[in-house]
Structures are given as C-alpha cells and as structure tokens.
Amino acid sequence: MMIPRIPQKTVRKLIAAEGYLELGMPIQALRELDKVTDPGSLTASYSFLRGESLKRVGRYSEAIKPLQYAADLLPIPHSQLPWKSLETCYRESGQSELADTAERTADEIASEANIHLRFDPLGTQFNPVMHHEVHLTISFEPAQEADEPDSDENFLLDEESEDFDLDPDEE
Image (cartoon, rainbow, N blue to C red):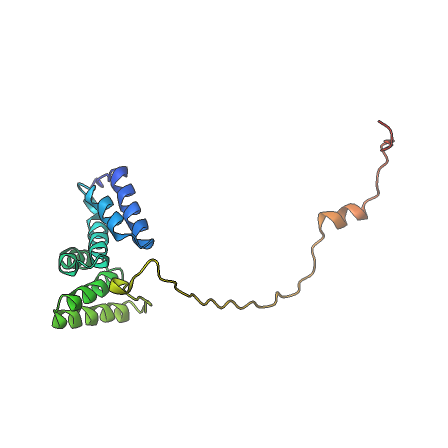
C-alpha cells in the first residue's frame, strides 16, 4: 500500500494556522486554512484547526461541523480536545443537552485513556491583550556528591612539565 504524499505547502499552511491560534490570532489562522485546497490525510487536523479558529472568533454554530468531524476522526486521547471545544460551541449556541453530552464524552475519553488534561477552552474568555499570570514552582534537589573525576587541569599538574627552551620574553 502506498502512502499518499501530502504537499509541503499544505503542511506549512496547517503549521502556520496552528501557530496563529497559539498566538491568539484566529482570523489569520482561518486565512491560512482557507488557502488549503486538499488536506489529504491531515483532514482531522485541518478540521480541528478550522473548528477551533471559528470557535475563537465567536462563530460557534459554524465551528460545530468541523469540530464534530475532527472528534470522529481523531483517535483517543487526541479526540478529547475537539469534544471539549464542541462543548463550548454547543453551549454558546444554546444547545445545552448536546453540550452536556460533549462534556461527558470528553471526560470519558480522559478516564479511558487515563489522562487528565488541564484544558480550559479559550472560547470567549480568550483575550490576547489581557495579562495572564503564570506561577511556576521549581524545586531543586541537591546533587549527590560523587568522587571528582580527574579533570584535564589536574591531569596536567600531575605530569612533569617539559621545557622546550622557549623564553616568553623573546620575540
């Protein structure tokens, strides 16, 4: 079986769209995705990026179809993200029963895969200008003392020095 070749241009457009989303620029992400003519075997990724972009610009009803397609195509645990986004889209478009179903599905995927993503869909809460604080705790453990290996410097000091009859003052 031959694996279909994906044009580099398509891959670059998808990567660019993902980058725009990470930077909080969903309109630019949509522009990049509009340039993709055939995502080929990357249809699931394309659909997720398109749905997520639409969601982030507040076009919740339009985002549902590509997010549903991505949720159906992506394997567990990757399908959890589209289901989480679907929850937001359904809720924002007034479909609370479907939102509850999408939320339960995302939770079931998490428990089946034994993962617990700390995922907070950005949706309407996202504001790229807003200041976000991140608290990072790093703990260091003292290094275990070990015998010091002979360094090059110690090695050179142990050897007898040779005199090559060079006088550094002579030029």
